[in-house]
Length: 94
Image (cartoon, rainbow, N blue to C red; front, top):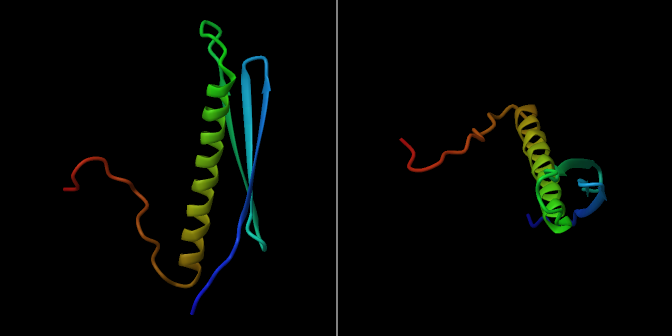
């Protein structure tokens, strides 16, 4: 059974005096999730707004990704199945 959906994502960036805040909103039709991220420039470093944008956006997307995985795990358990382990391994598994 084919299944195709379109989810819309909007990313908002706000910068003020060395602090960049990001908000990413996922519109999945029936549900909506919001991820948030912040980046602060060290006062001793050169202020490069693009780096703050990248860090804050990446952190907001990471927050959103964690929310999506958590929602999927709850849904899996809700249908009586066992959610797979989301633990990530670095290097060779033992």
